[in-house]
Image 1: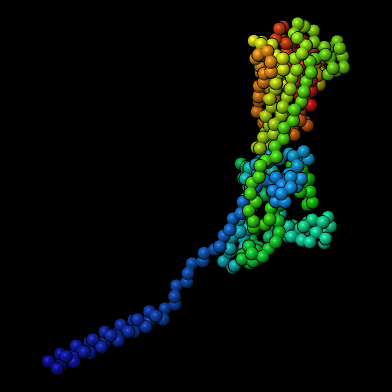
Image 2 (image 1 turned 45 degrees about the horizontal axis):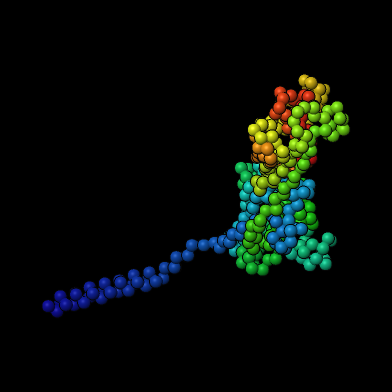
Amino acid sequence: MKTNLKMTKTLSLGLLAAGIGLFTACNEDPEPEMPFTPGMETFDYGFNEGQLLNNPATAYNGDGAGDHPRNLSAKLEIKEMENGNAEVTIRLENGLDGMQYPVHVHDAADPSTTPNGTPYNETPNGDIFAGMISVSNGMGSQTMQTEMNYDMLLDTYDGFLVVHDPTQAISTTDLGTYLVLGVFGQELPEAEANLRTETFMYDFNEGQLLDNTDLAYDGDHARNLMAEIMVEEMIDGTSKIRISLMNAMEGMTYMVHAHDAADPSTTPNGTPYNETPNGDIFAGGIEGNGGTVMAENELAISFNELTRNYEGFLVVHDPTQAISTTDLTTYLVVGAFAR
């Protein structure tokens, strides 16, 4: 009995010692490292409609040298790297395919110290972000790794994010050329788009287009018919036109056409326009009702392209006689399109 008891105690002490040793060994193992979870913040920027300074005069100037749609937006992503520094990514949406956008961060500055009184340094801060973003399928992005601490960039850096217009010469002072203008690391809410509308009036054809009364209308239609073109800018960079006829005869269908300007030496009958109408601009029948009637067309070209660069003519044909594309005396209205 004593022998067995002694053996049992010895075994128990041995197991206890082994357990203590095992427990001690486990306690001496290094604690597992926690996985790195990077910080990340994102900020959305709407198109520059002057909302940063609450001043429409600082909005993108659609009447200027540029011609960019007003639906472009930007997203800023600031991500923490394992070394504690910040990685900056800028993404563009609704950009023009094939274009390269200059995108810059500008340090805030005292206007009394800058060459042109800007509240920022005109030279971009390339240590944070300065580059060209190429756009394909309306999208583009670029990433830069900085030497600035992530928290410091978010909490202490003062500067501006600028997306320049690739359709015109770059400027670091004219805010009307900036597609996006916002505080770096701060949301810029979208604002109501400043879309333009322009109206062009056309009187009855009395030969005034070419200052030649021999080309005035000669027919039985009342001479009080007039026409109007209203051009609307669309947010995606396209345009829409509405053509109205005033004093149109009830029950009569008026053929209304846009004709591209052309060199008379190249056209079959020496006309200063292509005799085949341009249906992409406008070609259709408008039914008269004794008053004012209208029709619309959506164009693939921009407001500026139509009102500045397109060369063509508006023609309203006489529904009381056979249509002609060469005899101006059959035209109720003839005038330069959208001019």
